[in-house]
Amino acid sequence: MKKILIVDDEPNIVMSLEYAFKKKDFEVFIARDGTEALEIAEKEKPDLVLLDIMMPEMDGYETLKRIRENKDLKHAKVVFLSAKSKEKDVEKGLKMGADSYMTKPFSIKKVISDIEELLA
Image (cartoon, rainbow, N blue to C red; front, side, top):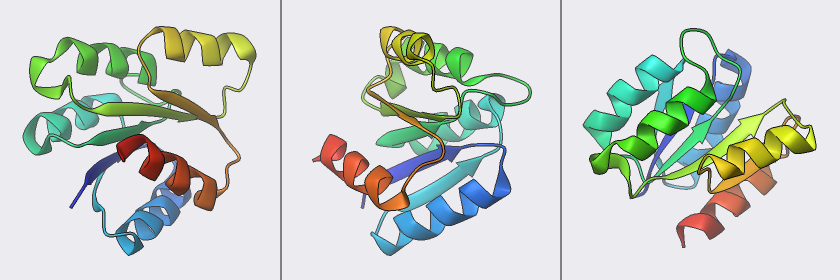
């Protein structure tokens, strides 16, 4: 069973994604900010981290940087899911090491199919 860590401070987004991924037989973990995400990621070693950028405590960019610096998490795919949709935001995210970048609002079906493809 693939493990996914959803990192977002918006409860409605978290709930809908969690439900959809569980239906697809993913083991789902939830974090509300970057600090919590790193704690969970170190313990659970997710296959993929679905990461928002604008969050309290630690933003998604800093979270991604720390995931990439952690040798135990090097294998994890990281996908930004953010309302920051300007080209420069997308470029920055990919340049920092994200495997993919999706913008909000999003289609849950599209998010799931893209992630299944990334993990195939």
